Length: 385
Image 1 (cartoon, rainbow, N blue to C red):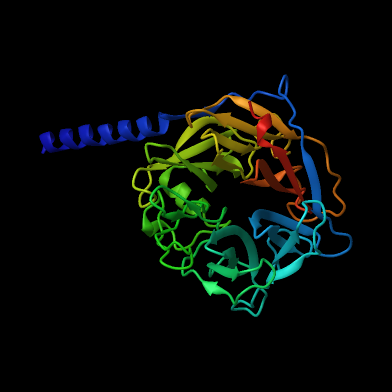
Image 2: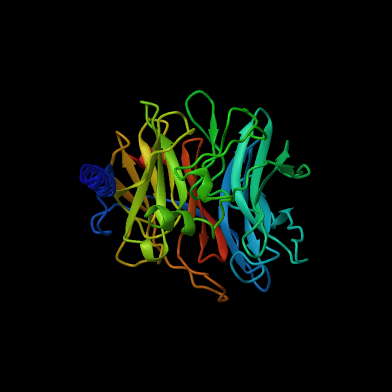
């Protein structure tokens, strides 16, 4: 009996050691941002897509696409407060970057089980052949009954009926392609994937959490599985894939777990399984961000790396990396201030939730301004030496 107990103690000690060792590891993806001192400002053009006056005062979660000679944008549009019943998804169109159509409704929420309007969240675009797909999440007021929907368009103006994606996810970014053609959606802690090139069917759930710890993925459900597994509240992922086929999913930490660093989970099988997340040395202000790859094969990050002014979401920075590990070349995209017109629940942040698009020699970055107005910025890639 004494020998058995001794073995138990040894095994438990070993497991605890391994657990702490995993937590102590630090990913080699990092940046070198400290402050704005010495950083060059990019020469930019900017265009205010929508700034409300008396109604629909909450505007956030924007995305942008280029489609058949037009620029198409979409975002979440609420009456006053963030993610409140009745929040819808709208879109706007431009043929010249400067002049935008008035917001038109892309999707309106249905009523939930208590006869209260649900909440919709814009979730980005995807294109195949001559079709544009717009995604959006839906859940009830109490953050239950989460669904992912899509609508398609062949002209960027007229949209199909809603198509159920059959996954309980409220995405952070729309689908992006990895090697082999598979599509992966960046959620909070789940990353659905499909081999259907249309992005309209065949979605399968995946996560670094065991299936038993979650039933849906939306802005309220990432706290519980994190607590049960000893992780900070991880959410709002964005990924890039290196030439060795590893998918690197960076994650925001929010709430009491925020310590100014992004975390990382990785997949070596194109998104079917994910490693236990570990902390990086990539600084973060507590906001959404976007990773991608330039035509010259360098990797980029667009986001808010400042840690001195938590949650100010300023300045908006572009960081570049030759190898996908060290993001050591940085530029200020924008840092001017926007004045809030009308207060609302959780409204704030100068450059909220940037999403990027590389198109015809430019990078476009769309953001919300204090979750009230929607603006897009563009700059020539030739500036990125």
